[in-house]
Length: 414
Ligand SMILES: [Zn+2]
Ligand SMILES: [Zn+2]
Image (cartoon, rainbow, N blue to C red; front, side, top):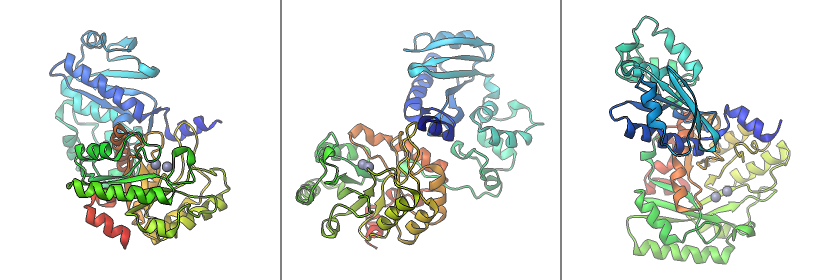
């Protein structure tokens, strides 16, 4: 099996959420516009925020197929190939299969639950609903209430303990995008990012952030224009100057320091000490054996200058799985040394994944949901990291970039 097949199989799909979700949102908005007053919602694994999906499912509270087909006709790049009484199917741009499920408006809430899935979650929930007429619910909250459960957010609906937690009213208070107060992993044109610090600061301000860490690459990655100690101090002075000129947003002096083959870093302790945030990441030697790769990362975790481990497992969705690692040992060490683990929000990474994130927070490890933006527009990729965090049962309190600047800096210093 190729890596691509492995990644698809492991994640149960093949289209990145970063590709599928914007198209699905465009399609849903188009239907809203063309069919005013009709309930339209994205459902299926996309609503559950999965990293990879096999198709786009949309629920429409309109049983009249010809009306919906007509509304779809001028959606650019669409290819309709099947129309039945209760569904319309076809392809979106990039040949992503889609299906629009047509239902009676009064049964919308019930279908919302069944079409969102997952199958395992749905099967257990539907057992309790067998005698209730499908028209009895206005929304999903009422449905869960009828079963004496708290509302279960779609990202948790995988039958991984959420039903029991909902019954016992102990569901996690999942982190939301609006909780985020800053981004702790952003590249500028000092290395391989596209914009200068002023443009990036403006982009952060636009997003309502209180802080943003500038974390360019370090010198061992010359292809990225990685910073040597001289340029790093120069950049730190520019950042200090910008902070003096522009109150309201604090730019943090950071680095994404490259982890060398033996687990050492390619900047000195003195260089790292002057920074507010140190992210350490692996960008080479992906194929070390399990023992060596684990030892390499343990050495990084034990380094007192390191605050955050970037994209820990190195997986690239649809491309390669993560390195050979004793993950449990790494997590135990990260908990012991109070290292923050990143959820890298780039839709091709989403690293650490939901399972590792869930295990990490259960050990008391803090998470940073970062964009790793190389372009200001990529700062919005954070929403995919939030989906990933929510699927891992991560609460706002577990995510350090929902904290105030003072709390973040105190945590790094302690
Ligand atoms: Zn990186
Ligand atoms: Zn980066």
